[in-house]
Length: 237
Image 1 (spheres, helix red, strand yellow):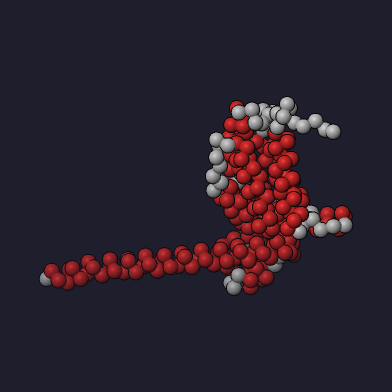
Image 2 (cartoon, helix red, strand yellow; image 1 turned 90 degrees about the vertical axis):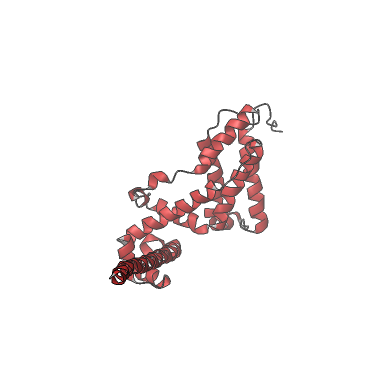
């Protein structure tokens, strides 16, 4: 009599284990589909903008279906907002991996500058999509429920770097981390986002490897000079 009882007790356990595996497989497949749609949407929106990017283009590029976009994101705008959120998330994640030597604040400052510049260079869709959203006056990202979570870890890190540098007499104490971060971002972002029109206007290419390396060094030098104490600055000739 005990054998059938054991068999009946074991059977649900096996079914539960199988259900768990199936649930895990389904969850992984759903995440893979969602990720593929996000990647495709990033490319399409970066190329065509929000207005020009069509749902059918995105689903085709993702090897998915239009209905899956509406299932996961609710609408085209919902997908666009998710793309912007993912851009910020990846940027912040990369910033969070910065390992700075606060015992050498001058070197740490340079690392933050070079990181920001090279992230912009290696992720052109970041600049392109933010340009697009600024044309829309930020109305889409303002609808993001998590927009307040996208504050930059680099601003906090810069605050620590500046504090150490001021204590050692390397930096003047009047610049805030926010000001320095905006200076770094502005010099890198503007140059890269306008490199084609600037090249035409100046009559020379500014996006060659040599010119890009020159501008990176110029940003480092400019930020250092902006932070240097008054008695360290070299008088203009």
